[in-house]
Image (tube, rainbow, N blue to C red; front, side, top):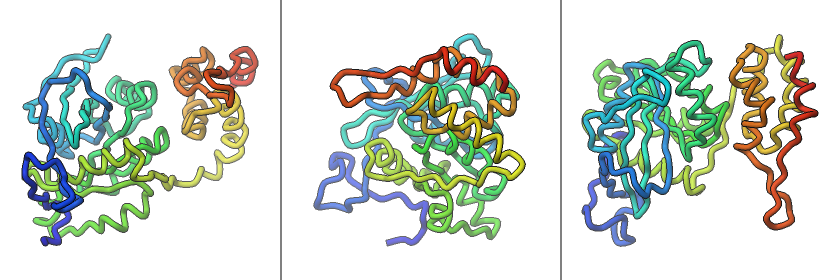
Length: 289
């Protein structure tokens, strides 16, 4: 078997991953724009020029199907693929260097990852410029642990004599990492398997995030408990604290209005009872932030 981490498995199209074949093999069906009846939603994020669009087209079989995001002039592309009986809607987010909402593109990408609550977010990175690209990956992991990092352009890295230690990077990040060369259709099936594993819980994500900067530690320590009281189920209280410190109006309003709380309702032990945090006490707490 080839040791190339981007090499796709060969597998009969009609098999679907039977026990008599390689258990890691997968047959991915490109569904184009057939979005009806999808079981899961997957977001595709990445810096510009990482080959993100090629990953999207390779997964869906499209040449980009674009429209606009509601109320925005930013292009929106959606497609679908199927694997082992499950259908995945793939949403291609605008190419951005961060999720700090400093531009319309960043705002659209950030809002979809946070408020759209995709079942998995794939961050496409450039194997030849990982240090620069991982900034976005860490920001996505701050919002959601359900993240897969796709190290694309491995063929270009090989041409330039650059080696990427995928297992070491996976251990460093704490989320699945997959090497691909999308324009050669290499590693795409492995990427699909990683997404499926994150969605169904068979692959555990435990993001290893950078420590809070020392100069922000005290402020963050004060804000995080307040965020947890207002939104008990939120997986990213530290990220919300960062955004409040930065003066992010959108996040502040979502917290005050209860919009964030509505995304992460807390189910009490009594069957069918859902506890929504009271908004009145929270408003006074964040008024000074």
